Length: 35
Image (cartoon, rainbow, N blue to C red; front, side, top):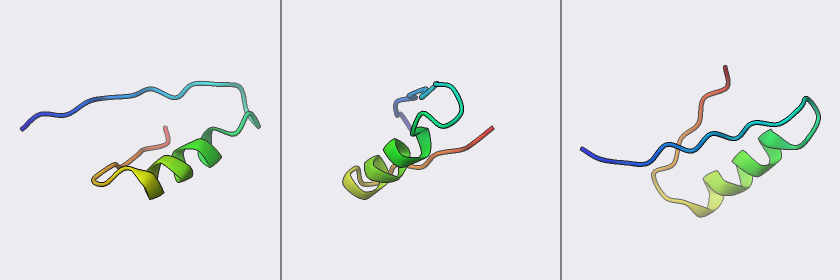
């Protein structure tokens, strides 16, 4: 099982969730976790 890990890091309010949501719609099999 292989894959890639991407880290999306930015200050609060910069649009990280917006970018993650857009990627989820475009990339099959993608998942994300907020921590």
